[in-house]
Length: 203
Image (cartoon, rainbow, N blue to C red; front, side, top):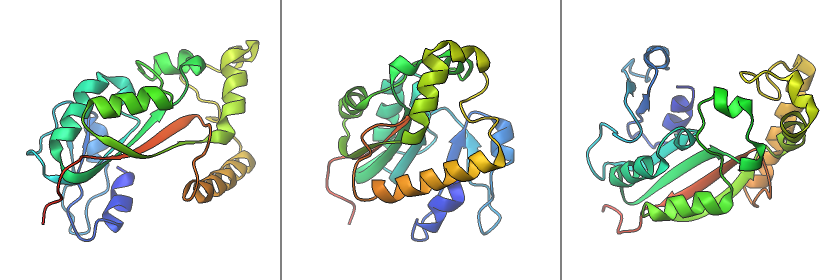
C-alpha cells in the first residue's frame, strides 16, 4: 500500500490500483486523494483487470512466491502494447536461508534467470540492476557461516537495527539510488528489471 501514493504522484492523473492477498493490507492501504478505494484482494496469476488496460504493472517482490510463469503471463495480458513492467525480486540462490523458507519464497534469482523468465512471458527487458548492494556482506555472513545461528528465520539481516544503523543504511540506499539512475549496480541482495510489452502504443 505504501507504494500507491508514490505511483499516483507520477501517474499523470491516471488511476492507480493495487492488489494484495492480505485483506488486512487492503484495509490499511492508503486511500486515493478522493478517498476512493484503490486496492483489492486478488492473486497475481489472476488479475481482475481487462486485457491491455495498463500503462504500467509493478510487481514488487511477488513472483518469487508463486509460479512466476503464470504471473508474468497475466502481467503480459494486462499491460497494453508499448506499456511497461517493473519487477523486483530477491537475488542469489546461494543466499537461500531459513528466512526464505519463513517468507514462503520458492526461489531467488540472478540476472540470467530473471531475464529468461521475463522474455519467456513475451516482455522485452530494457533496464536491469541489482540493488541493496550494501546488504550482501552481512547477508553472506549471516546466511553462509556459523553466524546464521544468531538470526532466526523470521528475522532479516537488519531487522533489529539500531537508529544509528538505520541512518547509515538509509544513507547508503540514497547513494545507491543516485548511482542506479545512470549505471547498473553490479551486485545486490535484490534485482530490479524494467521491461516493455512490444507493440504499438495506444494513440
